[in-house]
Length: 141
Length: 145
Length: 184
Image 1 (cartoon, chains in turn brown, cyan, red):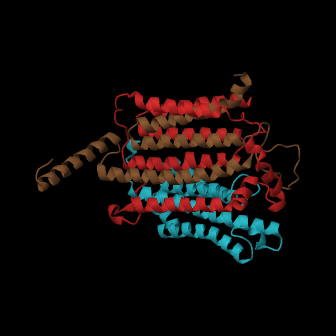
Image 2: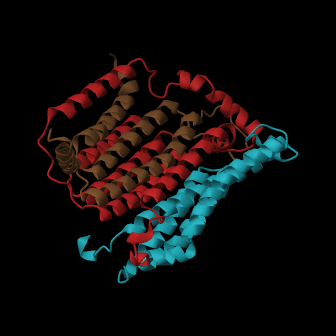
């Protein structure tokens, strides 16, 4: 593993570290707002990974001069990932809003946005339903 | 936020330039960084800022909720409609070359129309989402912040 | 120089992400999320993606922060005490990360002009955009013209998300807000 290789891949590894931090927030925290923040971090890291694939060393932003007199010596970065990610960011905020709306509804139904509380309430409801159902069916539960 | 004088004055000063900047980003998007998505978000940000500082009722007077939903649908339809028009003048769906006598001009017109559709749709969608959240918000006391 | 700027931005972003992990006041978490977005916008500028940086700054630091604050006001201000530390999530995350890093070993190095992403169709787009459309901003040309189909789909997705939000918490169920204008 030469220094050149490390420098050439360092960016990718750093993106993956950030991505995994977001992932860890999603799986280890119980608060739904925090989970969505973690998901956002994950998402932005994926965006950065995509954009970094389109970067050309010594290149510049893919916007030509207004008069379209293009100097052939100028190197432009790859515009395709930019297009994909540009739309993905706006779609991302729209879906984040959808997730937050779900969180608001969950809070209204359960009175909590902590995963543990909600699981507890769910189990209690389940148990109640089971005992009702069980006595009606002859007392299995 | 009736007593936050500085916020109110700054918002009054800054909201119109934000909207102007959004329009610049929208219509200059083919020459400089920008386009429908960015312009829509910036436009919505100006309205949301206004709504946060001056209250939901005032911003709803500027852009009533029924209009927001219809404009969002209109934006999407403007995009699709441009595609259908290009279909009827003899090219494929969303191929704008036939919209004017020169293909290059046609492409330019098509891009402007489509970006306008995106801008309207994104701006109104963001405002609609903001309305949905803010209409539910219980009153926040200033001591809580 | 580029490497140095990237490293500094990364250090700041990792610090922000770790602070989000540790913080229990949701207000601080939401604000740090905005900071994270702004830092990533800076990184997009160094990666030549000015349009993306633009969008990320407006969306991440603007709209999504407002939406999260709105959610926070409707739900709770504080995260409950975290449950006991369990090694399972950490293990899952480490394994996933290791697999992903193993996957990058075969990738072309960062910024290489000979990588497949650069040599396939990208050059064609850059070459044909001035001739076909006469639009100097290649990103706009691809977004609206060459890949107009994709963008149409994305616009519909954004619209659909708004419809979903309105169905969940929007004005269709009007019983909960008798004096909606007063939320300032």
